[in-house]
Image 1 (tube, helix red, strand yellow):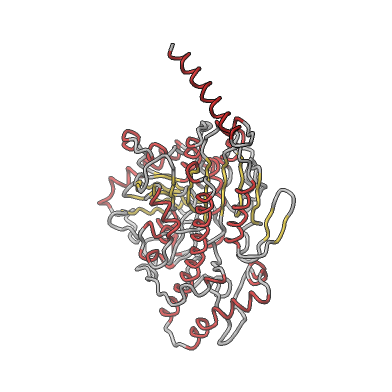
Image 2 (cartoon, one colour; image 1 turned 180 degrees about the vertical axis):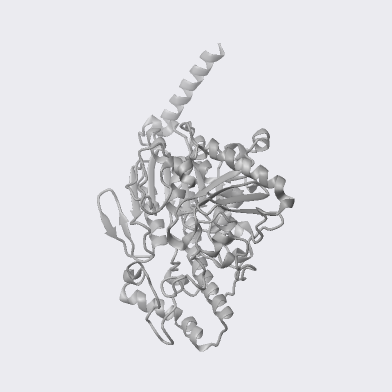
Length: 527
């Protein structure tokens, strides 16, 4: 009886909706009326540190706020303890697409690896389920995107000024600043999309990736701002042998021309060492070069005209790095606001899930460093905010989450079953505040970085993190590090050989072995 009544009611409802469509003067497919699955917009920046998002509250970010990104946190949920599985650009993107750790999705390193786009990915799965799929901006997986109805991607890393974009048909140089171009192309795709289908759109910024070239209007944005110097900026890496061999120190290893925009002398328009001139000055027009050097001239002259100690020169370089990095972030924040406004103006916001993240974290002078790669917190942590129209807002989630969780989460939000196996877990129970799921959530995370030898000379390592402790194994040299994050949040004191922690050390080693077995990490990858 109840079933037959439901069928009759459903039939009446469909007829009413069909009549409503007819009454407004147009005939759309019935699918467009009944398919109310949410749109998903995944906005990803490159190397955006949590320290540079003001919603996370770091002192640096309070001097360079991100109001548009913060809005997603205020209207959605902010994940306090979100981490990557392998802190380097391509592998992190592969993990996000597949829900698998690097060894399982096959993309462990940036160099010499091609992503297998035919395996189950977010794009492939959602495309088969009727979603219109697109990716615009940085791709960096060394193969053409698969599973996307449309793509317009940067060539390799991409350039800040007048970059090349690749589509299915051509490669074209587009004139303008990369963040603004990606925003423009995203809005154009949204305008021309198939409105009868829900969409899955990946909008992927180059910024604030190295070499941190701001938009021209922001060249001088922070020129008079003095950002706080991290307490461990002059770290000597005592008790951390692997860290002593790295090549990512701001005042020793950053390229003075390419990275820090320094010139050869007072009044000079000649950059100091630039390893990749074709992706920096080589992309600018003569007028753009003139504007650039004019904007930096006073600060560059001051470097030579003011007497400084070596320590003061090192701090000057940190300020130049942060000023440019955070100016790049400002354009990303502008972009988020612009796209958010587009969704609002076109009636899409109420049925669109908006996610903001980065591919990993980044060092902003901690330990004296730029870049990522390490399992140390600034690199390992990555931002994550999700605005879901159907769930509570302004929440902060403290459970341990990871980028292996993105794919199963997005699939569940779209009403699609995850393929088996995925290493990640759907975050929806946390977003929905399911008490049982919160209580039974994972208590540890696995991390593995493979790219050694490689840029910056960061040794291969893997490890485990719990809510308080971290254990890292640099397996090629058989060196171990352990940190008590409650007592030592900046990871300066390696307690692996401290016998007062022998019980915790044994537990961590047991948990690391368990995770290696659970994720089926091959033995030969840890040699």
